[in-house]
Image (cartoon, rainbow, N blue to C red; front, side, top):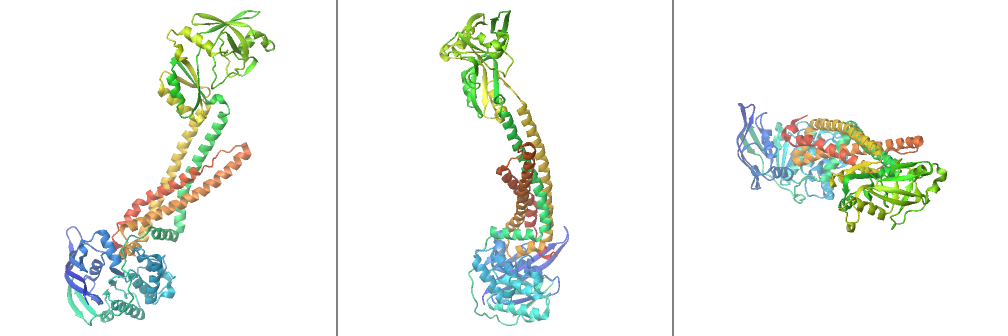
Amino acid sequence: MSSILRIANLCKTYNITETIKEEVLKGVNLELNEGEMVAIVGESGCGKSTLLNILGGLDTEYTGSIVIKGNFIRDYTEHEMDDYRKKRIGMVFQSYNLISHMTIKENIMLAMQMSDVDKETQIKRAEDLLTLVGLFEYKDKYPNQLSGGQCQRASIARALANNPSIILADEPTGALDKDSTNDVINILKKISEMGKLVVIVTHSSSVAESCSRVIRMEDGVIASDELKEKPKKNKYEKYKEIKPKSINKKSLFRMAFDNTLSNKGRNILVSIGISIGIAALIIILAISSGITSYVNQYFGQDEANEILTLTTDSTISKSNIDSIKEIDGVSNVLSSFRLKSATYVVTTDEDEASHTITYTYSTSVKNVPDVLYGRIPATDSIGEVMVDLNMAMAMAGDSESILECINKTIDITYSSSTYTMTIVGVFDDSDTSISTAYFSEEALNLFYSKAYTSYNAESKYSYNICYVKVSNITYLESVSSKIKEISSSITVSQASNNSSTILDYIELATKVLTGISMLALAVASIMIIIVQYVSIVERTKEIGILRSIGARRGDISNLFMYESMILGIFGGALAFFASYVIAGITNLICYLATGCIFISFNPIWYLIGLAVSILVSILAGIAPARKASNLDPIECLRSE
């Protein structure tokens, strides 16, 4: 048989304190061959288990060299050492170290999930190995349903899963009765006859006598090395050599899901804690959206609430107006000119009254006024005017004789010039108590050209007042801000700011309540952190088992991250359902009481809630996952 493992001048020292050190291995030299069944015996503390941990790649802090098939394992990177454990080494422990929430077959398949072996081959290989160790009929049982001897045989089957060349067994019969011990030793003999190196650490003289070679250790050195019989090799089924890799994500997620269900009582409480914060967030956003829509609808019924009035002490240029039209949310712009000091003189039968004309209309946002009597001034006429109902009543004295105003003349004085104009119509301007007049753009052009010597007829009009209509009231604030950016000389006012005030209060309340829901989420994330740290303590040995069969640090980290994520998914789903039910009941009550619905159903809020739940749980799981991945596998295996 050819040599498979060579050990040269192997030394191991433990640091008891900063100044006190204990030398456990003091220059071990060994050469171990294929097909050997080697027993390492000696008193407790002589270094047997330490040697086994080093050979198994669990302990890398040593001096000297270990060469396996021509490779110095001391030169391996961390990932290469993980691959060494899953490809070259099979570990068998005194306490079996099977994962309790997995069936026997799943325990065996776990090792193969860290390789390129496909699922169908994993199942066949696991069942073949269970047949080899006499446990095929127990493949779907859990470890707590088997005897100690059966668990140890299952542990041996798991050690063989990836067809390693070396089997390391640490006191494999220490907790077994005589019959179970014989069963285990016979299986290990069969394994050595397959051409594998089997190394057994034992205190049992009967186990040692069953081996082909016995190595006795004393005080950290080899005291004797007895070859009792030459290794023999029988024919056996060969399996393709595996290609190591990380545990695939699907298997990890399944493990995480099973782990979560194994402590479902505790994890349900955590999920409820998460769902409270998420449901509150969803409902707050839905209420804010619903009430905002209601306010927009209510105030949007009055077109005046969607109009901004722009005024200036100078003029609003055409370029400014063009820029305003491009603002997002602006649906229309009316440009006009206010005759700030114009007066009209009305002569009635009783006396003469003087009134101020405040502004004139054009034909856009407010459109041509609704004509009550008469007609609209001709577009090319500079001598016709239409007056509002207030002015007509002042002229007529009572509403029954308003028609008598038609065809009367009024004198309009503006900028030291007086113009006589004929009243051709009366319109309704109930939005204001101030008398107004409407005349054609030609007349407005005349007034403006007389008032401003810089007037250029080619460029048409410059304006000192504009009416900006927005698509809906939610744009009022943003449009107003952008108009002020275009020109600081423009004053922006709103006919009614009730809607804006209400929306401001809604926004403030939303921010406050969202902050409160975030506090609830913070508490839930702390719960996740605590539960995960408790889970690490409870499953320390499981972490050690996974590391001993080749799991990488990243596998351990991802396992706990997935568990945190699952808690977030459960919590988010519960919040989704709860908030939907609460919203539905609340809307039904509101509709029956007021005829209105105040909580909107927007799938985006529910998706945001689910995403936030998962994100919070993942962030909360980072620290525990990192803690779990950094644990020493040897210390983990020693934990109870």
